[in-house]
Length: 210
Image (cartoon, rainbow, N blue to C red; front, side):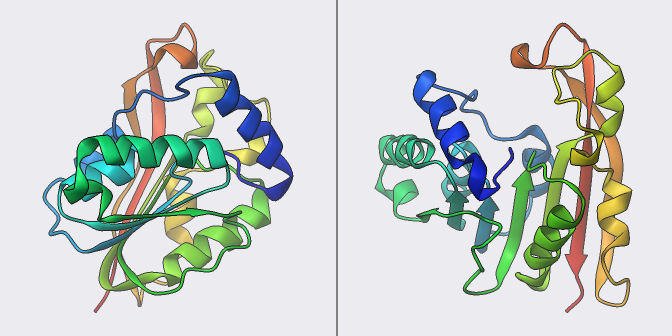
């Protein structure tokens, strides 16, 4: 998800043009990495229609969920309400451009999925997200892997928008971080990704040293 301020109207139009833009299911890689983690405070950047934030809240996490598009957040809040007060009461929805929004505290889990920006803006954002992870906490970054550009998957023909997990991992100071996962992880393509069988996610999971 591209979240530069100038894309606000573009994303808002996409959400308004479709009654549901995403599947409503939590991200496969988030489920794989966070299912066994003890609940705490979580930050979900680029939350879209809220599936990841709601999944975390249902597991006891207190979630701050940030996105640019008002319609996406309205749907997310409605989905959370439908899940019941125990879930909706654990999520704080924030409408903001994440390139400008500054986290107001540290979190036990900071996660972002398919948030693609070019070059330096991406590195600056990921650095700010890493700084928001509390000691002992976890950073989970998932993106479309650059190799998908050669598979026939529906991806913008903009190579600089894509990144590898190793690239993200290398930006973290080894003195302060333990890299748990940095890999290209295959998964089955979803219908909106085109007529391909397998795509790859860049999955980076790091734990901040206490």
